[in-house]
Image 1 (cartoon, helix red, strand yellow):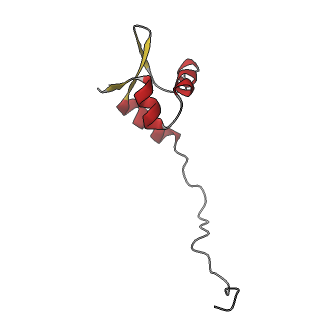
Image 2 (tube, rainbow, N blue to C red; image 1 turned 180 degrees about the horizontal axis):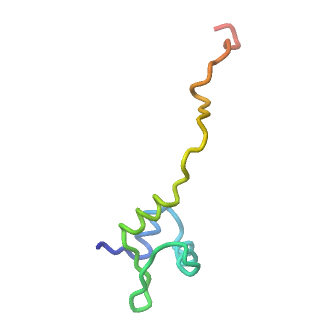
Image 3 (tube, rainbow, N blue to C red; image 1 turned 90 degrees about the vertical axis):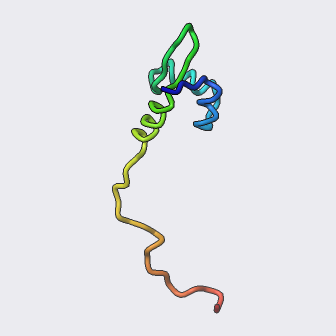
Length: 74
């Protein structure tokens, strides 16, 4: 188990430390409180990120659609 502090976790998630404190208070992110300090298990954080991932529900892909003639003559 590898524990990260608030600063390390904030950098890993690219969020502000205050956001982490808010998420922890609301029970929205897995964390451990040791002697009043928040710690985050990196494995739990990675699994939490995966659980937040939204699955694709549509087969629509704009990049595979047929393209019409280009404008501009070239």
